[in-house]
Length: 507
Image 1 (cartoon, rainbow, N blue to C red):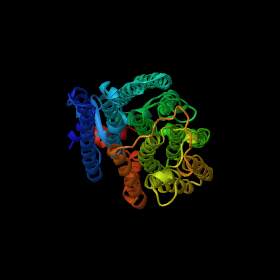
Image 2 (cartoon, rainbow, N blue to C red; image 1 turned 90 degrees about the vertical axis):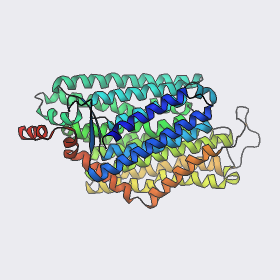
Image 3 (cartoon, rainbow, N blue to C red; image 1 turned 120 degrees about the horizontal axis):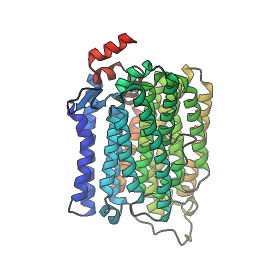
Image 4 (cartoon, rainbow, N blue to C red; image 1 turned 45 degrees about the horizontal axis):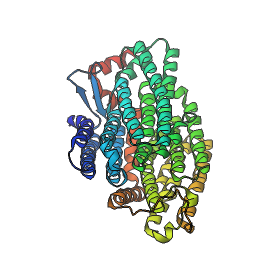
């Protein structure tokens, strides 16, 4: 079963190559991407089942035993998130057939899309910090290519801001990795969990931990490091926006969870209040940002920031309940953000614009589609029994167990404020009458095809399933949280048994 790990990384890479050299039409290349994404979903689902039954699995590349070689490892957290990422990649590949122009496809759109998916898979499955940096760079290069592909002036301006800030994050991450290697002589995360407590200069360890916090915080778009996100997401084709909104920031949150529970557990306890404050401010400011805009894509981009705050709360609270709630919210957030951006894309096709003041009449024209948006919006707000309700209820429950009443207050306030921009979208785009004389820049309305509707319907059904039957995902999230906070199974899967025992005895 160790070969599953390699397959999860190689499949999107192979798909990227085939989609580039495929001699057929743009639609045929899209079908190649869809096929590769479905295969990734199948393989990652088998991997998740195996991990759930047997525990973490690892693969030491090239036969080099950890911590000397390159380690791939899947525990419950990485296996679960990879399945969710594969679902989104499949849906976006299908949606792209309708959304992406032939010019962008000829420029290598599906190649970059699948290389970004490979970077996501590699980041989830890598067992050492240097290769985490490598997979971040694979994602950065692929995302930059998607940002500028066929771009206009506004799109290129957003791309420059996106890359400039992420390059700062890269420099900080490399600096932190270099310092940590100098202190410990290893970058294998399982080995680091054993070596970091033995470092004499713990003050320098704390400094390195803060560097990792800033570097991953930029990639996760947490307060006050989030300003690059709303400057770029609204300039992209909807397929790319949906992919970025669903996955890119979540990799940063995953990296924070992994490093501050496995590599820096002591520093995690010391800076938990900082993480908590960052989470609360990110959550609230994201919602306030959404309230100040009238373009649907900008509103949703700020809601991406707000959702990051909810996930960061789990890491800040630090308990198994809170961490499980954050992981469940991450699963919910990945799916709901992809769905909402795809819905926005259909609104743009039907209305010819994304500007709320120039939209209207969609409920009268498309009542079924309007109900889909309304359900997705209510799920984001957290109305029972939809998936967002369970995500927020779990966070409130974890806060109650720790008597963190200020967290509960912020969660309730943010949820109420989330209602305002989403009900504004409903009122302006769906409920009010369409303007009789559209402005000159409003495009001619077009009919979405089956490639646009299918992923929207599939994600909507999945959202409803998670809402009415949340127990499976909650159980998987709790298992993932417990494995993060009690990583003995992770360590045993990576390191030789005698080395783990020797280190524990030395401590």
